[in-house]
Image 1 (cartoon, rainbow, N blue to C red):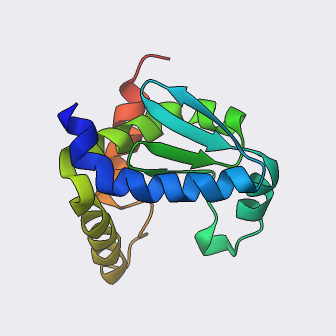
Image 2 (image 1 turned 45 degrees about the vertical axis):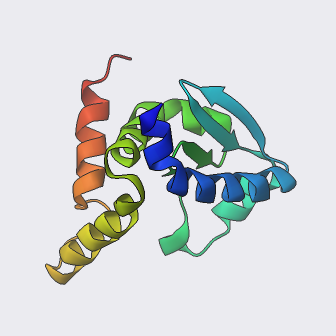
Length: 130
């Protein structure tokens, strides 16, 4: 229960985004204690964002938003690692994640692909049973 309380400030932001997504036609399901929201016009809106802002899925606390549910199923192991990162770092995850991206950008590396938290999510998801 403590992991939900600690991550709740981030989850609250995720819930606001989920509400927006639902008004844009997305549907929601709960998988392994995480709210997954995807589809409808929301998926099309995300796909229409400028390239640097586009995503297939994004985790905010215990909420995962995606362009559609099949995409969420395919990246669930990766996004679940991000959920655990929020459970560990709570609201501090936001500045840590963006700080890692900034650090990598300053080094001339990719702010997304070389971000510590993204590398950790890819590595742990690759080891997860399928």
